[in-house]
Length: 100
Image (cartoon, rainbow, N blue to C red; front, top):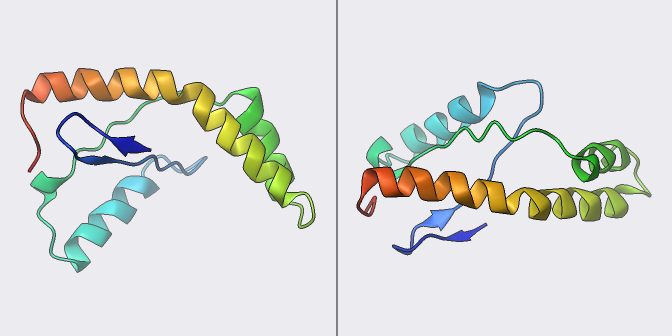
C-alpha cells in the first residue's frame, strides 16, 4: 500500500471468513525465510466490507468479469485507505520508533 514515515513497507492482506489465516500465512513465511518476527507488525484493522469490496468479490468469481471485479476491489480498498492509514498511524505512534 505504500511506505510509512520510516520507509517501512505497508501491505494489506485479507481472507474473508478466516480471520486466523493471514496470521498463520505470514508467520509461516517469516519462519521459512528466517525473518525475525520483530521485523513485522500486523494490525488487525477490523474494517468492514463496503459495497465495492462486496461487488468485487462477486465479479472476481466470473472469468470474463474478473477485470471489473479487480477494479471494484481496488476501489473498495482505496475507499478504506484513510481508515487503514489512521490505524497504522496509531500503531506506529505507539511504537515511537522504526521497526528496523
